[in-house]
Length: 108
Image 1 (tube, one colour):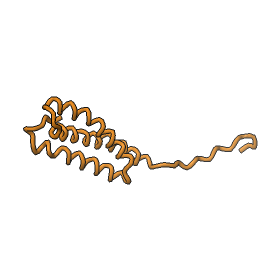
Image 2 (spheres, rainbow, N blue to C red):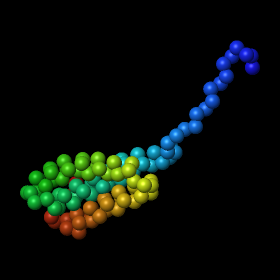
Image 3 (cartoon, rainbow, N blue to C red):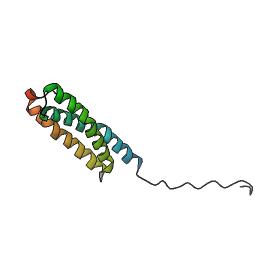
């Protein structure tokens, strides 16, 4: 290598989380968060003390707050597995009453 050519810059070590962890948490925020929001919508449609159209409207609007909270949790959880498990189980627990009492709810 001639003396007048600059040396190749050394590769920096990449800090942060592995790419698969970030992708998995993003997918958990999107899909498991959506499942949780959907379950919350079904539950709130059953539980809110309004008339049926009011329950559906209020539950649909509140589901955005639930989805935002679920997405924040997906990135705050200690592990990727915990993020997926907690969000999927929360969604299933919220959706179960709507399945048990289908006459009282309008499923989303």
